[in-house]
Amino acid sequence: MLCVLIFKECLLCSSNSAERAAMKRVALFLALIPFALLIGSALGPIHPLGDSLAVFRFHIGLVTFVSAGLLFLLKWCKIALGAGILSVAAVGAIWWGYHRQPTSVETPYTLYQKHLSFLSKNAGKMERDIRTKSPDFITFQEANGAHEQLLKTLADEYPSSHYCGKSRLTGTAVSSKFKVIVGSKICSAKTGFAAMQLQTPAGNIWLVSIHLSWPFPHNQAKHVARITQELATLKGQIVLAGDFNMVPWSQTMAQIETATRTARVGQINGTFRLFDTIDLPIDHVLAPTNCLGTVTTLDLLGSDHHGAFARFTLEAC
Image 1 (cartoon, rainbow, N blue to C red):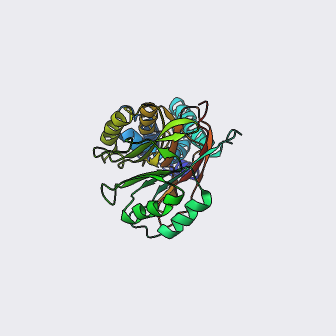
Image 2: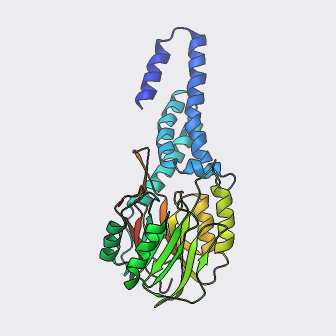
């Protein structure tokens, strides 16, 4: 609002009508930019640029709220009202996603989701953390040879493991305490995910680790189009986790949830810090729709992603 007050003072100080009119046009243009970007952040179903804008929807919403004050000052009251309402709705919905209290319910299953970073050398710390938390399921991304060895070290507690080391950047892995169904292990050469089907007390469950490409102008949209086709062929219930490089309220997440018949577990948590200032929620755990649960962030342990530790139900979902 300080910017709005400064502009008002500058406008009043100007004695030249042509100068004041030019200032108003410039101010109007600048005030409409964040409003347009906020609208654009909802257009992911039309173009992948919308999802890229959605990553920063919360921050764009805050700026739009300020610009609404400037639009009121410029007598564009209807547009100002629309900008104000839209910004409050956008910011409020995301804020609620971060702060909503989880439903109190018994959550017998746990999953340890970690983007490892191919540069990570902390396999020892990772092993201790996993053994301490003792999850039922483990999903890794950017796994390399050292992490494949980590899974072998954990085999006494996690006899079912599957490592897909396509490259040090795209290596994915899944591991579990439950027995794997023979012949169910999948390494997708086309899209780079790892999957296997497990026998659990809740029935047969597919466990999938996924690492999506970066969003537009990179090729995330094409990657999602390919991977959803493959994931949709998995028959039965799916538990899916990974580094999605995308926020929960995006079209990307909606597409994957639809294809896998899942929903994101728990509240929103920042898992990756961008430019050392902005915490982005881009690592997620998905479970069959209506499976309630909670999620907390993990320690970095040498990675640049916190990852997620999820607790959730599987029965009667």
